[in-house]
Each structure stands twice: as structure tokens, then as C-alpha cells.
Image (tube, rainbow, N blue to C red):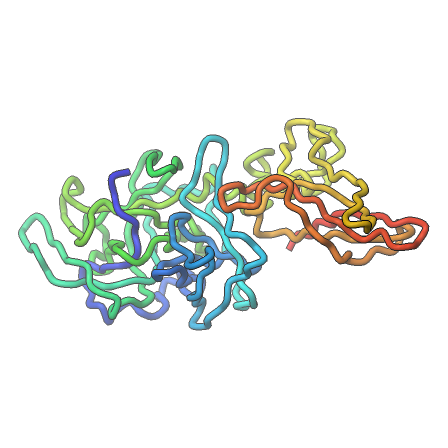
Length: 381
């Protein structure tokens, strides 16, 4: 894409000591997340999930040692392998991972494709990173600041405006729909005009819709390296690119999935448009298509013997980017009383960040009773 990863904020008319507290607009400051090694940014989605840019280095063993949400430090849930977003032929520079603990924050709304306009919109950007350095150019046309060092790295907010039109970015192994925000200082509040720099990939772009703030973009890269240029002429202004999240939120949330596949974000959980026996919620959980009958997406029971031990098994598909459901394997001897099973999972397909859909076989010791039944329970969080 001919650009450099984005990692921080420089504000046109502010010092590095400003915009360090929640904005008066109510933009979701507390959901801003510090993550990665070296430090970058993310956004807390809720239910223990964080989204960031896929290219962010999580650290040794793909584990981040620095996760800060609302001034509290959390550890990464290493039982969940970070998972990249992908849809059709689009490989998206965004991934989700999980934390241990509960920040106590509400689930963050996301802009919905076809419902919420996300271009030519005023926005607020919230991210961790370094501030402005030296003023390297100041003419009647352009103003340029160099990027500072890690001593100025904190959480900041700034404003901007998304550019009109549809943009697709390709390169570096990625292809995805994107939003663009330029440093053209034509906004009504140019002092807060934000440029992103080294240190803040994964930061969030938020838009207010009738008073409700929604996450619309995840920062991925910037147009220039080492300095940020603001200009009254858009042709000379620098810019930041963001994953256009409305185009991929169906991979994250059930209401967006229903809007994407069924044209109705409130379609019933139990609906079965393709009559394949899988209601909408299970189609979502098992990565099915509600418009294409495919009974092979249903869980399958079986038996295994490993090292002389007999197991009952259930094998199922799961799209791991879903952030609003929980899958639990349960066992019963009478199909009436069910309880969580002690499971040994085996990943048959997947087992990497780059494969978002896994096929999992869950093994449960058969025991000595007359029978044991297994099922996969899907709970909407």
C-alpha cells in the first residue's frame, strides 16, 4: 500500500499535554486500549474481546504483555488464539483477541452497513501513542511536525472527517474496504484535527449517530513516515487509512450478521430460511449461510478410542471472530438434565491466526454408564 503502520496522534493546534482526558462529546474514551509489543492500540469491544490491526506485533508467542483498558492492566487470554478477520476474497488488516478479567464496560456499538453512513462524517479518533515533535515546515500552504519519542506516548483523542467515496486497499497481503481521513484542517475545529503516527495502529475511529457513538474504523496505516503534514489543500495533506468496519462487522456480531445475510438485523433467532434444520443463531455460530441449505454445518457425534480410553465426541465448526456468543459442550445421560462437560478439544481444521473458522472435535470420556449424550450449547451474550 506504499505507506507505514499508524500508531499515534498529533493534533494540529494542541500541545502534547492536551486532549488526554475523555472528550466532552462523550466519545467512548474508556474503550481505548493499549496493546502490543512495541506498544500500539486497540479498541475494547465488550465480552472480553479487543480488536486491533492484524499487523500489530502482539509480542513473544503472539502474547501481549501490555494491555491497558480504562487505566487498568489486563493479561491476554492465551487459551484464545488471536484471530484475523476475513470475508470472501478480502483479507482484512484487523484481528480480535481476548483478555482475562472484566473491565465493566458496555458492549461497544459498531456502525452497520447500509444503515449508518460512514463517509463524509465528522469523527473522533482515540488512540495511544507519541505526540508531536519539532515543527519542520510552516508555510502558508502546509504545516509539518515530526514525530516525537516514546516519552510522549499516552492516550489521546482528536477529531477529523472521513472522506467521501469507496476505497479498497490492497497490498502487504491484505485487501479490504477502507475509510480515509485527511489532515486538511478544513474542519470546524482545526485545533483538534488528528494525524496518526508511529505507535498507534489499531486505534479507533468513532462516529456519533443521533447521540450514539459507534466504532466505524480501525487504524491501519498512514501516508507519510516520520512526520505529519496538515494543509488547507487536501492534495498536500497527509492521511490515515482505517478498516471500514461496517463492511466486516457481520463477522463479529449477530445483529450485523442478520443484517448482512437476511437484510434484517432483528430477524428471529429461530428462523430457518433455507430449511436445513439450523436456525439463524446456530448458522451464525457454526459459520453457516442462512440462504444456502447445508446440513453439514450441524454438529456431528461420534466415538474415539485413544490410548485405550473410550471417548464420546462431538465435532462442530466455529467462526472464532464472533464476539457475542459462547459455545459450551454439555453432557447428559437422559437428554433431560445437561451439565458442562470436561472436554479435550482437538482442532481438525484451523489452529492459526490466519484461519478464522476452525473445525473442532470435542472428546469426553465415555465412562461406565449405559449411555452419554453430548450437545453444543450456543448462548448469546
